[in-house]
Image (tube, rainbow, N blue to C red; front, side, top):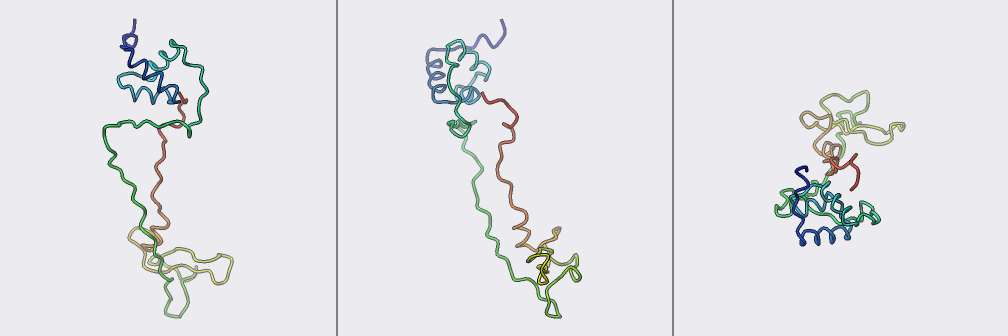
Length: 157
């Protein structure tokens, strides 16, 4: 007998398991909701109860169960600061920065179609450590969206 076979499946826990299973939650989600049981223990109990024969809803349709329902998330969504672009810098000769006049002390944000004769660069002072000015650096380096990399590659339960 292994350690997992000694899980106490009280009548209340079995009823909660049945309810969550019919709601379409995955075995992992049910294990988190019940607490103290593994995903495999949930799968085993589901099979022993004969509940396994259900259609699996698509991931988007499944209800979500928080990993830690008692702890509020410290992450809050903050919209990105608005990007206020300034007009490109006009050089002393009245022209804009071009491929021939751009330097490493100038914002290298491209403006216009590179095949057009009006193509030029921003030319303003770059942000420290960036090829772009403050506004173009914010535009170029958008914060990453939250992805759920940890679930990719695992079999849905």
